Image 1 (cartoon, rainbow, N blue to C red):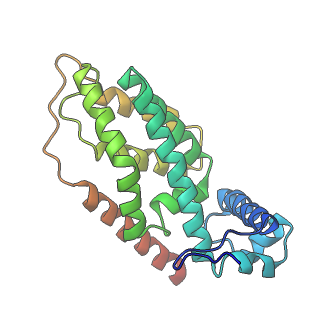
Image 2: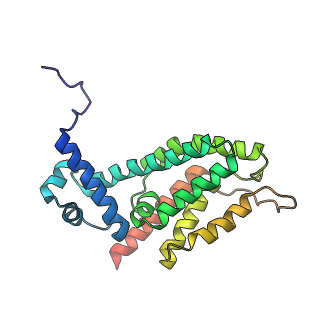
Image 3: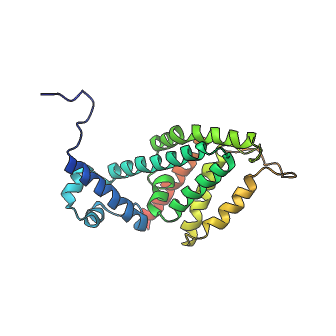
Length: 225
């Protein structure tokens, strides 16, 4: 009988893997409408599965959110690679930001997982490791092509995503982000007479830490109400 190598998990049976994906799809749909405060029971009901089936795949909601986070990072990494493959670096950058912002605008759960209560140091490191190299290369190419202002820096991109995501959270209007993303993108473009930006006050890891701390404060405030 073949043995499973030490430290690795045996592959799930086909039906078990199908149930796992079913739970993840249901969680994404439930979190999209209600946020990550929704319970595993809510997700099980939405998936048409028993709660026990959900617990066999995910011991608790945190494990489920971790799995969703992995999927979301895969999506964002794919967008970054797609942008990098565009010979017009500015067009690639704009397109990737528009696609990411559109998903965030209509997906409350994604916003909370990426920028809210589910954030954590390990997840922040994963985002940076997966996306930062491609975005750094893309920004360098956009500058070299004369499209991106030379004083733009890598942390400007997640900061813009955070600002755009907050529009939906604060107004409840997922259609407003396009207007304000365009204003921000116009500010990123290289053009004669552009005003120099003030010195950068936050680095990439500081940005992630600040987002995490803000999420912790918001979660504490919600629990205290």
